[in-house]
Amino acid sequence: MKVCTYNVNSIRARSELVTRWLEKRTADLDVLCLQELKVVDELFPHHLFQPAGYQCYPFGQKTYNGVAICTRHPLTTVHYGFGDPQWDEQKRLIWGATEMLTIVNVYAPHGDVRGTEKYFYKLRWYERFRDFLNTTFHPDQPLIVVGDFNVALEDKDVYDPDALRDTIGTMPEEREALRSILEWGLIDSFRFLYPDQQQFTWWDYIGGAIWKNAGMRIDYILCTRPLLPALQDVEVDLWARRRRKPTPSDHAPVIATFDLSQIKTEKP
Image 1 (cartoon, rainbow, N blue to C red):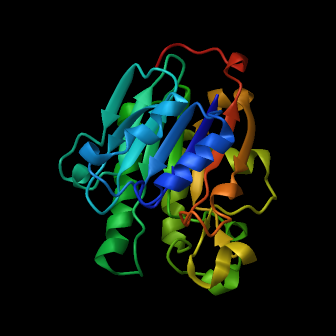
Image 2 (cartoon, rainbow, N blue to C red):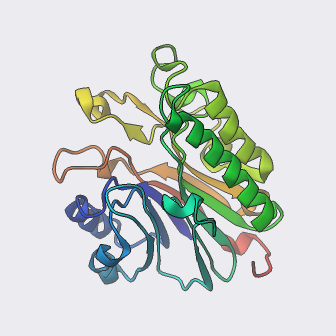
């Protein structure tokens, strides 16, 4: 099973790119988790994904945020948001279960400089997400959590640790918030396989950052320990980002490959 997380930065603006990207990959992705849709559910472009055999479950809003799970395998259940109107005003969470595992797709808040309203909202959101994990799942079950977390966990996850120190996405309290999610019982799949490799997933549009590889790693595929025997590889698909036309997202897709025959599970 190949699971992909991709912040598309507006699915309608990225329609040509996504179409060409999926054709290039010849529909080898089993589950495609999208973030930052920037579109209401009624206008989600299902037609982009249907030719490749995907059924998509969007949870979107106008102009901002939005997440979706597109899958070539049936989901036994789909849940939209935290189930809390206050926290679900911003569409940042969707999760679904297959016969063998559960997949959670998140778009964490970007935040802002220390002390601002958006800064505090980001930290509170992480606390709410940790509570959600505690009350909904257990680390012993096969669980994959993917998405744009808007935090670079370590200095090696940014191109210039000195220049970016204590900025949005690298502040110690943000990193501690993401570590609290890992401490619940999730493993950073890329870092598990490649402990010393530097690989980014986001590059600013300004200054040709993608061509200089001046980026950050803020998109993750996390999994619980029962899935580690099945984890085979994690890659960043630079084709979708390293181009000028069609206009890319500022993120690249991240793809993890799991051999589910290597695990024994009960239904979630």
